Length: 313
Image 1: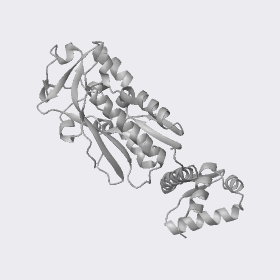
Image 2: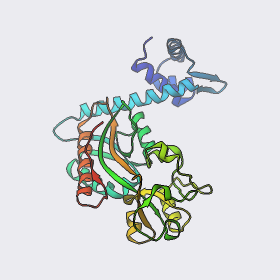
Image 3: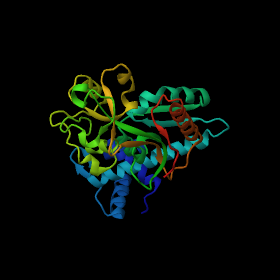
């Protein structure tokens, strides 16, 4: 039996209901027929998808994997139906946009205003997360488009590099020195750097693993929150490797200062990321255009400290 749309919908219904009888009732089919479909699907795939329990069913590891793929398929199908049903001269329909923490502070408001003004029929959902989490959500189909740092090379992704940002050592004068001049990579204080863990997140800050491995992070403090990181920096609990854009307001308020890292210089790339093989809806194209224009305007007007790029992977 081929894995078709009906089988996908049946499987999702069972997984969501957790009880075959309840799923059969929701689908308006006989429970015996639903059991037959599950058995045939398991036989065809050669793996066990469900564990039968006294009070229902539970997904196996293979079942959870199929559920992720099946959910993404139904999400894509729903967006395709909405796009075709509402297709006209104006862009309409839902688009989800993921933004890294820095992008939220730098351009989120301008993007929302631009979409509201130029594409009032678009329903925009804005999601904030760390870059690695946003990449995972793009790959799973739960986010349509994302602004992320240092995205991995992956043939499943369409990646448009927008700009490069120099990285700085940020902290109080007592930790990083009173000078505002550059600081050599070798002079970064060991066991004082916070914000480099967990490792997937550190890749979005420093792309080269060989350089990440040369930094010993703080042994007593791990922060996975930009707000908490900023408070820790102000309190002198550690220093961090960041772009100026990430803490622009705090630097202007002189809560701490920043020194550009040199020898070697560090930078990170901001990219607009989407699935490579997903046909774009008109709403998606309009949101992508708005994001690109807003980011480039912020850089050209020097509101976002960065250097324009525009390359495509």
